[in-house]
Length: 189
Image (tube, rainbow, N blue to C red; front, side, top):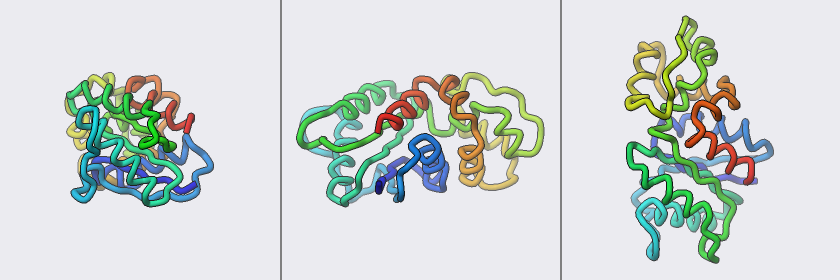
């Protein structure tokens, strides 16, 4: 199964998103990544709001490029309407959007997922790390990750390492609105 991964930035691109997908949806054969805001991919015309239209456009793009499935993840970034827009696109069953997909939204941001498992943080960073507060309520997860990292390696490399070692059940329980929903949709793909 050939999968198109679409997300917002370099931290997801550098292997973290693919690691999560590989660990949950065993059996996908190949992955390619693209950026959700890519200029050549214009928002789909028709009903719905911004991220609903963008998600439908990416569904059409994945179909056009002959992928077998689409996995798209965006950040909520303090805009709760994005959750409903992506849920609507996930459930869209018109001929236009009849294509296997997993549309996920990270509550506040993808960076919050990196803070869910302190044992993974300790293993990757090589020093003691206390349990972080509720990741989905963290207003500055990217900055908190950077502080924990302390310049040891790039944030993208840090995220890729965390994604490989994080306890997925713990991540689902600590980030139920974002990662939990994403993981369930991915398993159903």
